[in-house]
Image (cartoon, rainbow, N blue to C red):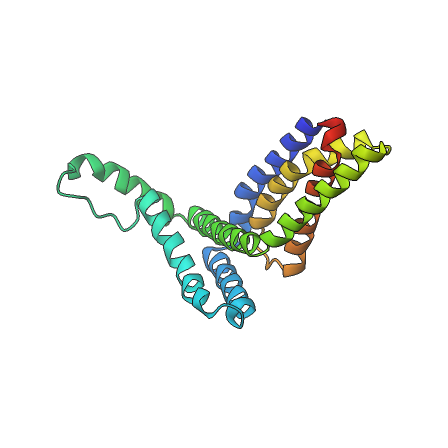
Length: 206
């Protein structure tokens, strides 16, 4: 059941990669990236001032990385035969000159920016994860000593939740809309609940 559900989610992600660039142009995805960076900067600006320059450079680094991988800003070294590399350069230049593929590239850059910001917030909120794991370990010890009744179906659902949430997060990161903070909070809360259930019931079903 879980494998079929994951296959459907992967199809959803692939469909999003194909579908959204056809409905939105590249500037709209770039604008969303700017909105997320500015929103993050406003939220952490009063907390950690030293992080603001890092946030400002995220989008530039992502763009440079995509240029290096896709042939943009091509600067061949002296040890490389330029004649052999010209077909690859021309291929990527023609590919990204298409409005559809330009939008796809901007969408992928936007999703990478969102992923980097999500990882930064995950690291910032990692003490909550540690607290949940410690609490779940205490609950596990109490269950083990009291021989309380456990729920195997709930445990199996919690065991599959992290992978399902990860694929859903990929799908959400591709959407051409501004993702509010409460959506990310729901994902993180669901992840914490699944981790708590896994650790607290591992002695019985693990």
